[in-house]
Image (cartoon, rainbow, N blue to C red; front, top):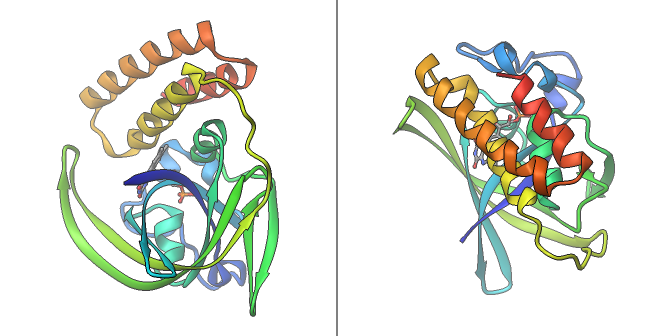
Length: 220
Ligand SMILES: Cc1cc2nc3c(=O)[nH]c(=O)nc-3n(C[C@H](O)[C@H](O)[C@H](O)COP(=O)(O)O)c2cc1C
């Protein structure tokens, strides 16, 4: 099964200023998502497949080219999976200004989100880049496979009833993340869908959901 998590990572290469990971051909991020300018630490919601293999937990993710996460994990072998709330998942698509804390594993210092319920330190053991065609055209996808080296509980998850705004704000975040790769007619369709979700969020969500929904819509 695929689970939505937040991946946090940091780029040694970029921190030294040797290479600007924004400076890749066809990088469309700057055109819509200028809140995701490169920070020291990076966060992004990503769908991850989890698989138990004996005592090992294996993970797999498909990363679309041109994101910071793609560019960082092309070179860095270690990252953190954060199990966190739907709201933090949605917020992580908008900007990189997370409440980061650092964890040390052997010689590696890695960022994670202080709101996470649980984190996994992952070491990448395999990378494969494939060409993929989807509804929006062709792109490179990097399939990464990793093994969990350490699992750590950070915060008790709250016991709260389901709120529809949680699911809807994540759906808005998915649509927002697609804005950079669609043409103008698809953009209209996305806008309509986002507005529809936002109407419901306004009825059932709290202040945070509504503020974040407004931010997503102001990017249109
Ligand atoms: C719920 C959710 C799941 C996502 N899953 C993926 C994914 O599996 N692979 C991917 O490349 N992008 C995925 N995205 C889009 C990235 O999160 C998005 O491109 C983000 O802006 C990348 O941030 P970065 O440039 O800081 O890496 C997902 C977005 C959301 C909201």
